[in-house]
Image (cartoon, rainbow, N blue to C red):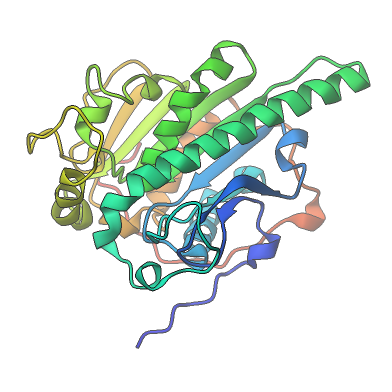
Length: 317
């Protein structure tokens, strides 16, 4: 049996928003844990990384570390990872120990994950609302002008569904100037086309950010063989029962629209986080309006990462 490698950085040292009750599977925390506690309140800009389904805590941590190594400074200094239990099917409000089904889960648990991604999005939304209120109170106390948080997102697989559900919820805050969403990158998005096409549930979410980039691949075998089957079992949808509608955004791409850009790749489903070219695309979009002038952490808290393997895009961004 192949042993999973140790994460290149300790979990306790990694800036994060945690919704997990345990290291793998299990229920979801109803209130997000933020580490460091004032990470969002004191930050002016954050790069939020969102993993997909069938990822336990350490798998997500390894993915984040590899991506940030390729992304480089100053952006990895502004990064925080979201950890959510997309790797199990234990009931949401139940116990804190992973059950047998959670421990045995795999790709076939897909049909349970869209509701969990939606639930996770609501908790992150509540956290960002609370952050905006805390920033306002802090500014009032200090006699300063409120400076809203600038949010950037990089998401993978079912994490893209979570990200789009979150962006849909954040539109009110963005319109009121309480939050700025600058850049969103969706990698191998496990999101059905019927949700993002005209009149789809998440169509407007694609317009929330100033720049949204969709990285997709016909070489994605997970989305090819597992997505349609799982999507056919998702409940509470009124459209998309045709096979064409159940195609994944991460395998078919999307017609370019204002502020939304698509990039075809040759990557398989699990290759994106370790791809230096994917990191290059993200860095280019992040740098479109300039590199941040200040870092969130002092030099003593700089996190170092060991180099992981690379995969390449068909065309550069």
